[in-house]
Amino acid sequence: MSTHGAGDQPSRFDGRWRAVYTTSPSAFYEMEFSGDRFNAVQGEAWYKGEIVIDTETDPARIDFTIQECECGHAGKTSKGIFRWDGDVIEIRAPSPGDPRATEFDGESGETMRLVREGD
Image (cartoon, rainbow, N blue to C red; front, side):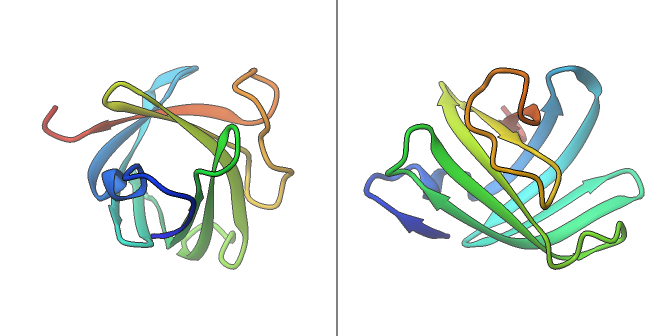
């Protein structure tokens, strides 16, 4: 994973996760992170690409650059923020191309809670 800053948080992303939207718990993605790569699948929708994490900012930033998908967002970046909540990662990321989320306020994108598969 491309990162700026110190700490072991970025390596903690590696593995399989279930990403659940907080406003719509039945809508979830199966996500897998490996190094600076991600794959996400939700039913027929799928995305593959690169992530960049910056833990030097407050809140920490995560950018998803979509390189392949079935949705027309290839080449676009979703610029989000994240925080750890125990063993859960909360990510707020707007639609690709929209301005970066700046707070966990309900105004700038939807929050996903990522729980490691098997937990």
